[in-house]
Length: 402
Image (cartoon, rainbow, N blue to C red; front, side, top):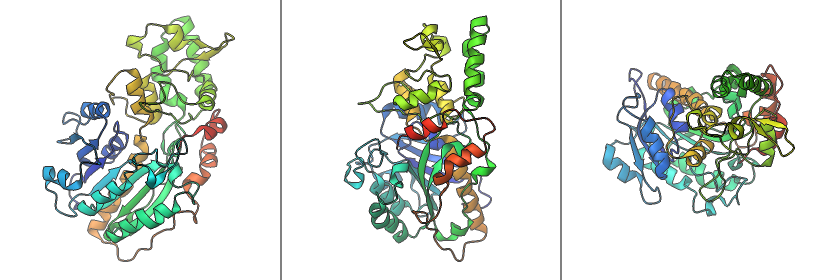
């Protein structure tokens, strides 16, 4: 990439429903390809990553990465070594998630080696890899895998590791507690131009701020609806949501997570026991808008899939393929776009600056346990910058998946 080029290029593997892709697109990257194995998620990507929406000739490729390698991809694009600006990916989380068995590299779903194969083949200018917090915390759990496998391969390929951090989504304008581990590595000439985004410069967004317009529309203008809307808003106006949990095809239906998460949602005036139909498909207002518990006490509305997507930070016009449960699963498993955008903007600035003035000397930071990370102090950070009390914070803190 040169300083005058319009948009840096990107290829993304394990793209899912496009959370990371959406954020990187907003950061100014031009996607050449989005690679994903799930057919429904590919349909979602095809609905959104279109030329009409400004994505150019981005190709959505349904591929199994255990059978599809970088050489096959390059048969499509013919990229020279080092020509690609960014290789990004959210490799599967189950091998490292605290919600699973945490088998790490012994789990057949571990695609870190595949991601590194792509890095070594294309030699992109920058690499961004997203995963669950469990990959970094507790630090000793997967330290041998990080230090003996992943980092050495990146360094041998000529990369400087800018850091491997736990990033909390609510510090980046997402109305949800969702910590993710993010690794950024760049070629030497860009190394000292990369700086992690500063969360203190980004405003906290509450559940009420994110959902008020759509909630007001759902409740309508009847006296009952207006009263229910005001009740919900009073509960949600100071709240950050607990982590959305998407489940899998084998486990987990369309609800907002385990018992503790549902209790946290109830403190926000939301019924987390299910997902509502969209307003145009609503056939049971009592179920979708006026939920009560077994004692007849008011809980509040259930979220629609589109509202869950807003909690995840997706653009309002992002469309999801499939019926309600399939669509919600895509939302719940996504990487929040605002986080990807913030980090993507930092990467893009480094690429531009490095093209003008290549880095001369750079020492890798120790972001693997010996230095404080944003994620370790995230709760106080979020609280300090939220004007109203965060009702769900304590319970949500304990319900985070991963």
